[in-house]
Length: 80
Image (tube, rainbow, N blue to C red):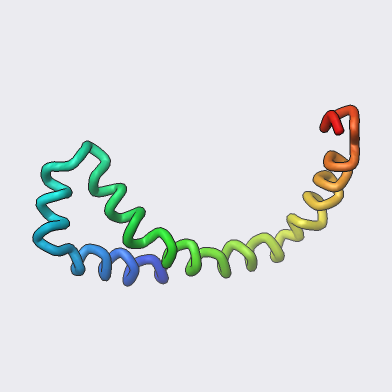
């Protein structure tokens, strides 16, 4: 997704010296955690609109909602 590129570029170009040393000395997943921390909210917001459009385009809720409703109201399956 083109919208993701500037989010990652900003995160990478905003790395401080302290961040860089933390990444170098950190756990194996230090870079992943850094990117998750610095890009997670922005990526989620950016992708949310696209996911919503895709779900609407294939009428996913048309099929999913009745199934979810039936499951949620079925006491033998849910134990309620």
